[in-house]
Length: 81
Image 1 (cartoon, rainbow, N blue to C red):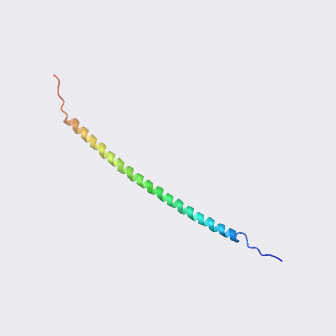
Image 2 (cartoon, helix red, strand yellow):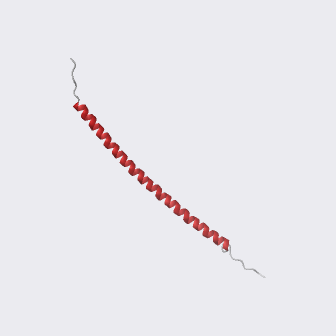
Image 3 (cartoon, rainbow, N blue to C red):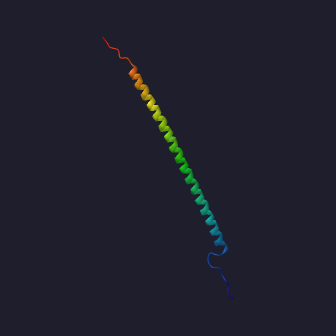
């Protein structure tokens, strides 16, 4: 009597493993994609915050320079004598 065997990879265990591996790869790909999107959003947020900070700092420095300059111009220098 001769038994027929399925080719390798066609039995239940192999098909189940294939499904599990495929499902894991799909989940991993989605997780990596989600994390990449999160990182890019964080980079955009950081860049926007940095631009706002440097803009505010620049305005403050300009205001201080203007105030210092006008204070120096308005100071009267007395003479000793």
